[in-house]
Length: 186
Image (cartoon, rainbow, N blue to C red; front, top):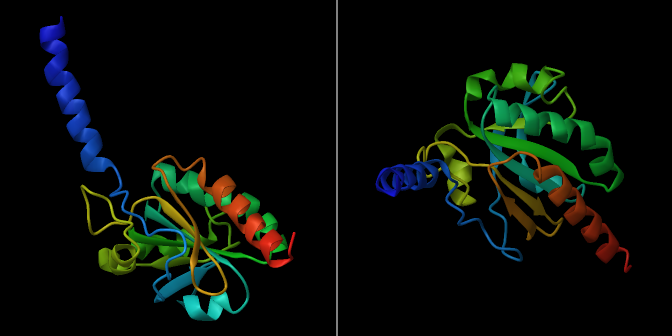
């Protein structure tokens, strides 16, 4: 029995290494790379500019692999359900993906995903994701699932990388709340 488990275990470890994110995410306190990207909000196209968004307050930039895929659908829906909590803290949320970018207009509009509550940006070729060290190992032209909270001064306040979509909202919302407390001296 153990003779057969070793090759299976090795194959499983190799497969997980291929689909895992690079895990080399940018560190807290470093300058967030500025970017501009084509984006959609409720199906309407516009150009998202990080520098302009930061003038309004903190920005949650969450990278996800591809629109209309199971984990990404869940993550977008979770962010849409929590968007009022982010807004109450003065933060905006934007999803960024290099996968299925031709589907982002619909993805941004559909109730079961973003529901028109926050924008999603196209990152064809994962140019932005590469600058943020947020690409998939097996598919380096796609972004992984890494979320950043960027403070209004342009520095990275928090990073969370996990392929499960479940923890990203709680992690980033807690970080945004901590930023607000720090800004108010409490």
